[in-house]
Image (tube, rainbow, N blue to C red):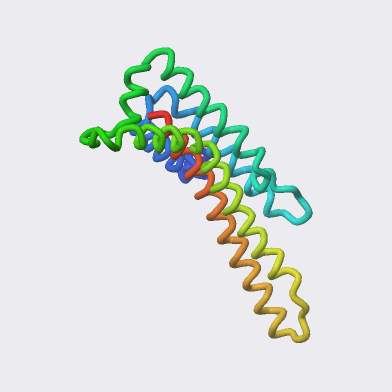
Length: 180
């Protein structure tokens, strides 16, 4: 089996991710978000090994990626597109009496975007690790219960692997959506 035949799943994944992110942002910027996705996924994956610290479970990890993206977006928009930035604070068709409240709500919504990305990533990874910890600390009085617990832990680890990729994907896609 040649190298290119063995790597077709990786090529398929990278091709589909590139086309997905190209629909959301300029194609030249997709490599940044695909790199971010794999960086978060690898950190989540490494946290599945026993006695390792999962860095995405700490809020500083998420905020260190979300806050710079958000600041770059806001600063760029304020400098190059101030009218466009302010136009998004009031949706079309809003009654005049509600416009001050809508501006306040939209400002708050824009400010909490990095926080929501961080909380989403942190909470989902912590929840899966908590399940693994609870299943791993069970006492095993019989071989049947031991077998069931081992089976459950293996299934939870497979679920955690899926959650690790999904959380990395969601974080990257939401970052691109906030930019566009």
